[in-house]
Image 1 (cartoon, rainbow, N blue to C red):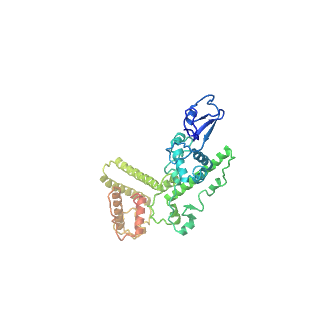
Image 2 (cartoon, rainbow, N blue to C red; image 1 turned 30 degrees about the horizontal axis):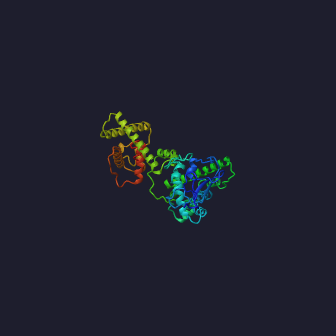
Image 3 (tube, one colour; image 1 turned 90 degrees about the horizontal axis):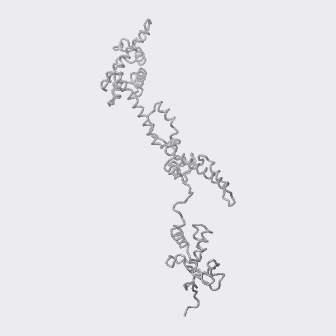
Length: 415
């Protein structure tokens, strides 16, 4: 005998006790979901008639094998809850669904069924259109997102932190670059009655603020890379670099703007390579001069330089003698050294130098010969050790070096 409490589909006679669709225009017409979706018609019933869902809320949308046994009533409450409370508020959503569900169960069911399940795969595209893409340089450029990563705090004392206004836990300063940047967003608020123009204006303010933050962080990174904070505090005890000539100093000053685009090590390598280039160009010009004079071997260059210095010395002595010709009373000027040996080998300028230094001509000629030989060996790449007499005073040595440099006997780099 059939159970009188059960309901059956009038078309296929399937059990529809838990879920059926009742026609609101025909009497005693109740169909199962399968027949209703197929558009079944029987007697005076037509598929276009109004219908009413008769549900006890006990059937499952995902089938009886779905994990957790969620009923259709719970599914509907879950969708209402996520629309009301938003994604992530699982405790409020669990309270809305009912006491039988915990926040963890609510989260797992929604993520597994509506995001990673078939429904999520069908509704959520792999690539979301109109998504904002950051086209800036991804690694170390002036506007790179990597510049926003926090830096380690500075290793300075408490007194130095107070002097700088530095807060190590936040890696911030009391007075930052563009201190008033926060005023762009301090007064912003999101209102539901904002029109499109107001929304775009607020987005522009936020974009300007983000750019200012990136510029602030970029300046901090440059200060760290070039050790500007220790230099400001006077803590940089490293040995000073070798003195740079005037040309290199001017070049560094002109190319200083490159500091914001290149790391410290890259910039130093750049200047070092430029210095090497200048040395190579000078060496090439010197070799070209040797070639024009018929010299093809470095050994011959020593004799050539010695002969050139002798010619220049003869020219200098000749010009001085011509200028001194006819003048009287000048011989008494060198009375202290004129009777010493080697006096006749000195030029007029060398006589003045030896007389002012109270240095004998032979001692001067010895020091001069040693300095010129060492200079020529260095230019040929031959290592040499200074052989100057130990009794020679530093001041006298410096005066002689300056004199030889000004007279063209040695180059300025050697001095």
